[in-house]
Length: 260
Image (cartoon, rainbow, N blue to C red):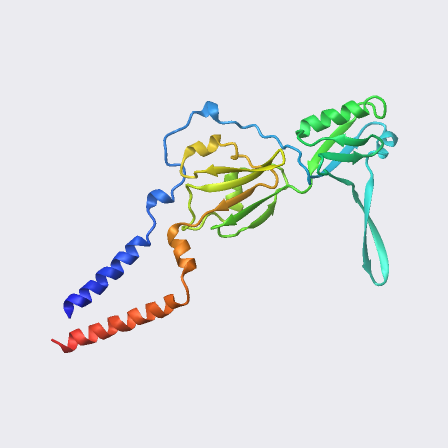
């Protein structure tokens, strides 16, 4: 009977060991130093369909710029009265990569960077409409989504339009211990197509990855490890099995004591 008792404890011990996570599977940036010449610190926001742009134009001639800084008015109701609030006009990039800009009309801007859009607007405005305009472009709906085995999955709005994959993961509270750090998936839209990139957080090669700097609307997915998947797929019998195992251990212990 003692032999059966020992066998049961050995089996439970093996199960607990297999559920452990190795240290080498969770520590970030484990390999040797990378060639710093390969690391790019440049970052460019590429304008895409469904981007919501806030374009502000200023100049010494305030009357000249007024037609290009249209105000959108929103209304809120309270106490049976409507109150109008003026806000900066935003421009939605359509499926063709175009916006309808005041006076100028349709502009093809999809695929341009922020600097390229500013140069295009200056070319259109100066000197026919505004002399020496100062143009500011901001992406109003910049966001990234983090899904899967992280502590706080969700979509996050990024106010400064610049974020790395590490900063995005930090916003989501980091990966759970059960998240697979070697196989992070980043889904990005490029030229109208969904493109997938794989990232290994355990490697310093991450810093030269094309998705180290994220783009607007990028989606990060963290895959759970095998143990987490097995745990999630277990049915309600798991609790019953554990209870029965506990009862069996108690019975074997009692029988072992009585048999002495």
